Length: 333
Image (cartoon, rainbow, N blue to C red):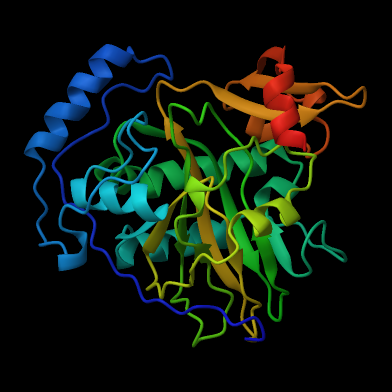
């Protein structure tokens, strides 16, 4: 592959819980939520026995103050340690339905690429109706599976993530900061619609294992942090899990990740759902021209109409707060 990617096959079955998300509001009372989470985790049982390496591993350092993300306790412990887990998310029928959803959309065409040659994400498309349809499709088709795997999480926005034939490598990076990461984890649920692997050469998703424990700064939308991410994870293991169509990587948004090039003659298609706890406020960070670091506090309609680079013009902004000097200095150094 030219970069010495570590190749790790990680297959972890999801918990088959008879459970549903409690409430649909971002303002669910934290006390009631903690009690519900504790009750569910205490009685949860998986239909499939976890693999030996997922049986009650010790909690990761620095994870104590974060509330639970995954319904399966063994997967939660692995998530806290490694920053990601692989789950069985969509069955064959759901994968076929998602293919139909993608094909029914009116996709824009490109002669150039905003970031990486051959890499397309729905956030590049300025049409609110287009983004809203993707969100609707993701929640309708994957909603029950997400409810089974995650604990009281809600989709912030959904993206089709496409690497066209012979698309370039996506470099090491971490996603934007979407919420208060001292209390919560936002995650991306990355679900390909065809098998992906290093061996197939079709642009799979790779992660730097445990890198969420090294990323302690705000990822500001208009501040490049590639070098900082690379320095923070120097010496850590890189893994590129083999995925079957319908499996998903559930990845903490602090995790540094990458994608090898698509060497094939077929596009690689994945649906990415960025999700957060129902009770967490949504944030978007922006460095103003005058040097102030701003936190936009949002509802999720922001992501339906936000043009990257123009946050002030987007709908869905609840408040704008200047970030204190200490946090700003640490994030922008």
